Length: 265
Image 1 (cartoon, one colour):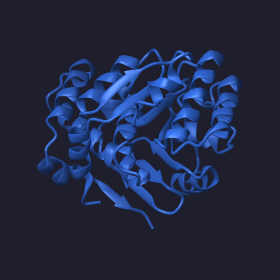
Image 2 (spheres, rainbow, N blue to C red):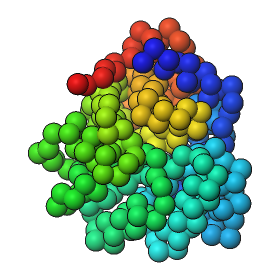
Image 3 (cartoon, rainbow, N blue to C red):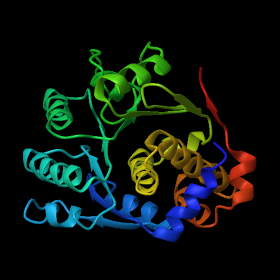
């Protein structure tokens, strides 16, 4: 866990290309966050070109926030191409639990190709794990469940890294469990911070095949930038602008001083 900033430096040096098929509400924010971390974003969802675009990429983000049958078909084509190339696929199960259609398409994607990281809030991840949860759109609902065991068990079942975001983030690869307590409440008042987190995770997974530690490192850096941005913001609007600024200026000193990450059990 001493190599968190080294991973960020590697992102900045290598500038990996992160292909997104994401939702139209936050697509620009996801592009901006990827760019500010030092990677290169591309947003392409037409089925006529997704496979070719994936052939150029270093990681693939799939976000089901604004879902359609056509988008799912593009996601499947992109997922197959990513598996063939051997690059990580990050699935953000945004809004899982809200509708039957969304839940069915999540299952379809998870069973169609290999996914390296599944990310969501507690109610979204609980839905994927089979709990009968009704989520409030894309916001987390209260779930009475041990999130450490939930992340670990689902990671084993899916053979993937599972990321549960919230006031405390939990990351598990089915064996190890990491707890991250960086971040700030104001991040929950800005639409898109969850979607941006998936982009940051993909950015770090593109340069490190230890996907659990890559995801944990990504969240630490992202959320430390959020803490720094809050100090100079007047509210959600200035916070969002400040977040991009603080990401660009993240230093080794601040990351090492402010990181709140531990291995559980």
